Image (cartoon, rainbow, N blue to C red; front, top):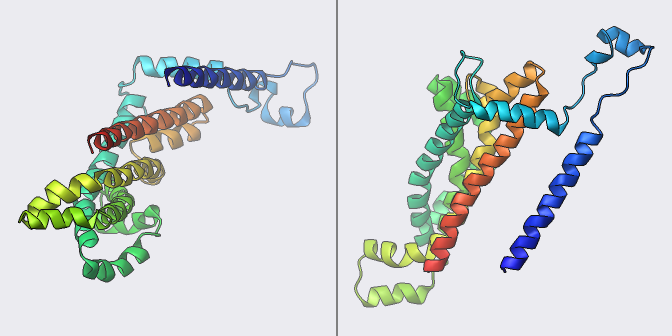
Length: 275
């Protein structure tokens, strides 16, 4: 197993080196000639030609940003660490609020066929709605962009947790519940000592899906509401035509998303191991 992991890591490293090499090779500026094309004359010269920056420039910019990630030079000039902190605060607040509602409600739906049939039409209607479609209504009712972004994260996070919790609870082995009833365990003890441990891997799968969706949605939400956050940072740097910052921020979004997924994946493995 360790040999396989080592070979996989080396293969990934080779892929990375090849991709960065191709990116660097195909993004070198063309050699300057004595004559300028009509387009170059219109843009003010060959130096004005817009190009995707090579990885060497992006890495240099990343080093500068990460060496001082928490600087604050005004409303439109904050370090990447501050922007990510704003986004993580919104994501985690909306995410845990959703968990507080989705997991208990999922238990009720999973344990009660009546509640499942009663609530299923509402779930099927609300679940396919794009989270960003709620943003105008949230802004009108809440009248605060920060709270509206949290509400959008809440909406997009609740459905995977709710559905997976209900599915996990409904599929707990019936003989385990009968054994609990034989031992005269109350409803709460049965829920916490029998149903929750058995359904925990499925519940955590839903939580893992939700955190990924929440991190995707916050970028788009912050582009709409502006102010702070990694989504606003990307859009603001695009407006400044700073492609180094745009590419760097895209990579940071991917890294943070991966770390969030790895954290919940580690918890899910721990639960499966203990089961």
